[in-house]
Image (cartoon, rainbow, N blue to C red):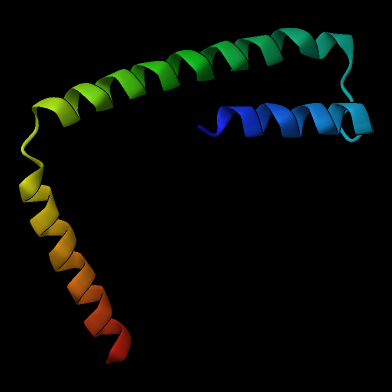
Length: 76
């Protein structure tokens, strides 16, 4: 959901002259983009698989308890 916003910001910065780089920076930029893309894709696939087969009601109890503790700690 956030990818179009990121690409828009990059395009705006490139067109506005805020981002400048030399030709020798192309390889590190491409390598970083590929590494981030592959890592994000694997993480998304893993997370979707985990959510589909996990019993998340246990996680909801944990979130409720931590939230309650945070609210109490805020008022103390």
